Image: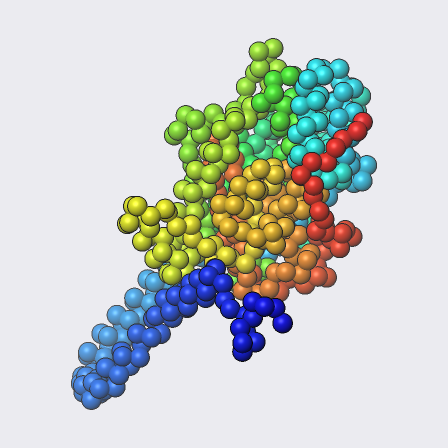
Length: 493
C-alpha cells in the first residue's frame, strides 16, 4: 500500500478531485431543481383538492362553461401545433473517397511543386516546413490536373475534379438512403472559390435529372463554414415546404485555385487544402424518422464581417505579380477565437444545463472574476471541429477544455484527408460512426470556421445507435486509427 494511503486503506482525495465532485453535486442539484420544487407544489394541490373538486362540479353542471373551455383548449392546442417548427431529420450522409491513383503524399506535393519551376527555393522551403508541422499523413488526395506535368488548371480539369467529388458522394448517399433522385425537392450546393456557369447545382440537376420544380441554390465565396450555412438554409426551406427531401452538397475545388506565386500568405492554402466532398440528405417527413440517423436541433450562425480586420483575414486577390491567390492573415487564429466566443455565447443557452449557465452568468456579473468557460462536455457527447489545420484544432481544444478523445475525429480526419474545406465536418462524424461511438440520444456539435469571417454551429441528436455494419468513407482502414501524429514529420524528396 502506498504511504499516501490513510490508515483505513482509502486514498485521500486531491483538491481537484474534490472540486470535481462539488461541481457534479451542484450540477445535479440545479438540474433536478424542478423536480424538487414539485414536492411542495404537490402538497399544496392535495391540500386544496376539495376546492378543485368544487370547480370541477361547477363546470360539469354548467354545460356552456364546459363547452367554451373545451373549444378554447382545442384552439390553443391547434395554434401551438401550427406554430411549432417542423422537425428536420438527417436521413443519411456520405463522403467522397477518391481512387488510390489520386493519393498525394507530402513528398509528392513537394516534387510536383518543384517541377512547376514557378516557386523559388525559399518558397519551396516554406511549404516544406508547413507540411512537416501540418499534422497530415501520407494518404491525402489531390486532383489529377495538379498531378500532371505541367499542372493542368483549365476549366475542364476543374469541372472534372469537382463533378467527380460531388457525384461520387451523391451516388453513395442515394444508394444508402434508397431515395430516388426525382424525390428531391430542395438542392443546396456550396463551393467557395469555384463557381462556373452553369452553376454546380445545375450540374447536379442535369446529371441526376432532378424534377423541374426543384428549389436549387448555389452558395459561393462563403468559405469553409459554408456547409453549415447550407444546412441552415435547407432547414429554413423545409419549414415552408412540407413532405420534402433536401440534398446538401459541400465541396471545394483545388485544381483551379492552386497558387503559382511566391507570396507567403498565399502559399499556405496550397499546403492545406485537399480533395473532398460530402452529400447530406435532410427531410421533414415524419414517416422517415424511424430510419433517420439524426434530428437537427439547432443551427447558430455568427458573422464578423462588419469588422474590417475580420473581413480581410481570408482574402482572395492578386499578388504583386498579378497572380491570384487566397491570402491568410497572421491574425486568423485570434479572429477565429473571437468568432467562436460569440458563437458559443449565442448557442450556450440552447444546449447548456442550467448549472453551467448560472456559473457563466455569475462571472459576467462579478467583473473582477475571470469569465467562466462553460463545460460543453455536459451538453455534447461528440465534437466535430472543422479540420482547418493543426493550430485551429489546438486552439479549440484548449478554449473548450476538450480531451484527446473528443478531438480524435477531427485530428484523424486532418491526418487522413487533410483540409477538405466545408465537407471536413462530415468526414469527422463518419469517423465517430465507424468507431461505433454514436449511440441513441447522443448529441453532436459541429463547428465550422470560414472567410468573412464566420463561425457556424449545428447541433444534432442521434435517433438510433449507428451500427458498425453501416459503410462510409473510413471503410477498410478505420482499425488503423487513431495514430500518433508527431509535432514535426521531416520530409525528404
